Structure formats: structure tokens, C-alpha cells
Amino acid sequence: MRVATIDIGTNAVLLLVAELRPDGSMAALVERATITRLGQGVDGSRMLAPDAVSRTTACLESYASLLRELNVDRIAIVGTSAMRDAGGAEGLRASIRALFGVEVRILSGAEEARLTFAGGLDGLQVPATTEVALFDIGGGSTEVVLGRLGGPALSYVQSFDVGSVRLTERHVYNDPPTSAELTSLAASASAAFAAVPPLRGGEIPVGVAGTVTTLAAIAFSVVPYEGARVHGTVLQREQLREVVQALAAIDFVSRRNVPGMEPNRADVIVAGGTIALALLDHWQAPAVRVSDRGLRWGLGHELLLAPRA
Image 1 (cartoon, one colour):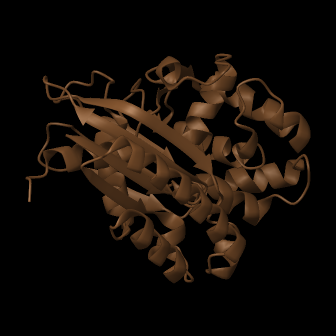
Image 2: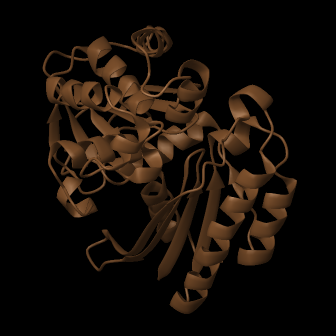
């Protein structure tokens, strides 16, 4: 069976086309990531901007064309923080229905976290009995999950309204950001995670999504970007701090040209990196294990295991 999943996020729209292997694992056939910034201005207006909807619709049109060529059996499309928090999505919902023949499913923060946990740990060889901490930094929100893959339930699941786009819009007004803006960013991220449960000493949490993979690509000089070269790598906390500080010290144009940088993330990468550091500092974690997978992979497993109609 061949399935397709689309994750419409605040910053990017992610596509996965996958098949089930004989051993029960999932094999990716096609992956795409397109930054459309659907959450542009949502933190202040609580409405989707028409130009952001247009960019996202154009992306989805290209994905629909590709899926017609690939003859997928099942499609699932989900919306996360931007579509969860903002009005003005009626036209986008209608476009999705017309393009794919399915309704978009708006995930709660808890649903998003559960699917991200299952998908983010795919391919990392994590024992089912080991408790894992995982975080997913999106454009509008950050999900933090603690649990075991083989456990009956996750022990901690929380979605926080802090993301790379949202915090940039709240705190950054200069290019490059001023020291006061960087201090405000860090304080906001740290305050958000103050109640997150502690980890055992020396535990390495898993970081999911484009902020962490981009920072790893910069740190390890993965040019051009290849998910397989990033997935499972371990980035030391102080190494991550050095990368974020270096990016914060240069202007937007220079940041776009840093080797390993996804250019369309250049304006929000400092806020995203600050969020990652706030969590690692809160946990006193020595490093982060990088996952190139996440929600779309968890959704893919869900589709492949669902009984046939």
C-alpha cells in the first residue's frame, strides 16, 4: 500500500509518500518541504493572511499534481498551530477538499505531540522500554513529549504557544537582533518551559523539525541538505549555542548564505534555536539527538496500519 501525508504547519508544508516494507517498517518514496509561512502575522491578528493562504494553496496544488502521478492509495492532511489558532481558513479548507478529495484534520496540541513522538523516533533504534524526551519546534508552537514507544500512554504531553515564527514576531524588530531582543527571546522561551518535568542526568532528548535539522546541517556542514545524513546525529548543547550565537550576530542576508542554512528559515532560525537552547538548558541536557522525521511519519504509520474500508 502507498500512502501520502501532508503536514500544514505554521512555517512549512511537509509531504511524505511512503510504502510498508515486508518487515513492517515504513519506506519513504518521496519527501518534500516547502516554506509558505502560513502563520504570517497570526500571533497578532488571529487570522490567516490572504497572501499566506495563496502561497500555501500554490504549494498544495503542486503536491496534488505529484500525488496524481504516484497513484497513492490513502491520503491524510493535517493542520497544526496556524490553522488551529486562526480564523480565515475556510477557503484553504475548500481548496484542500477540491485538490485531494479529503478533509483537512485540525490537530489539537496533544494529537500533534502524540503523532510527532511516534514519527520522530522512527529509525532511531530506541528501545521500547526506554523513556524518551522529544521536542518539536514549529513556527507557531513547540510540543514536548515524554514517554516510551512501548508504553500504554505517554507520561507527559504539552503544546506551548512558542514557535520560531511566533517568537520572532513578538520580540525581534532589528536586523541583526539587538542584545535586548535576544535577552527577551531567551526569557520568553525559558518562562514557557519552567514547568516541564526534569530529566534523568545525562539523558539526551530528541529534537524534531526544521529548526533543529537546519542547525545540525550548519553545525555539521551538510551541504546540500540530506535528511539521511542528519537523522540520528547528536549535536552537543554548547555546539548548538555557538551556532545560534553566530547566526544572531549577522544580518539576514548574511544568514541566508551560511552553508547548511535553508534560506527561507533565515529570519526565524535565531528564535527557533533559542527555543531549543531554553529546553536543553532547563533539562541540563548535554546534547540533542536530531530527528529528520516527525508528524508526517507518525501519520504515515497511522494510515498504513488502519484497516481497509
